[in-house]
Image (cartoon, rainbow, N blue to C red):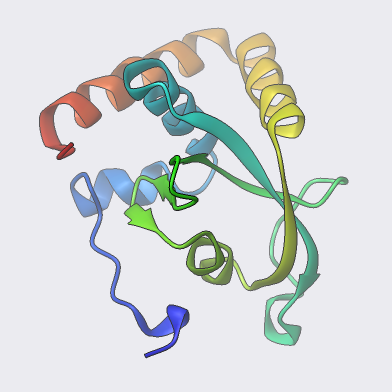
Length: 134
């Protein structure tokens, strides 16, 4: 079974996992960082699968944020998975990880939409505390 064939189960209810996949992934990663002490990083794409050319990304290749576990695995709202599997969900074939890029995304959200950021952050913390297994 390849990493792309694995059926990932969300660590929170699926509707909320989807909400924290696009647009609010950095908020979820920050909540995980605060609650679990895990390192938050940005996924910066350097090469996409040809069918994923239209994937939304930042000028620096930013696609997604998640946390890293000490064993090298990543975790986002869909749960713990191989970092390559997380990248594959977005059609990313080659990438690099950046703490700095993640920090910029968070700061931009906090500056541009402080009330929305705080509400999403508080909800993410509540979801993590309620549903996530250690």
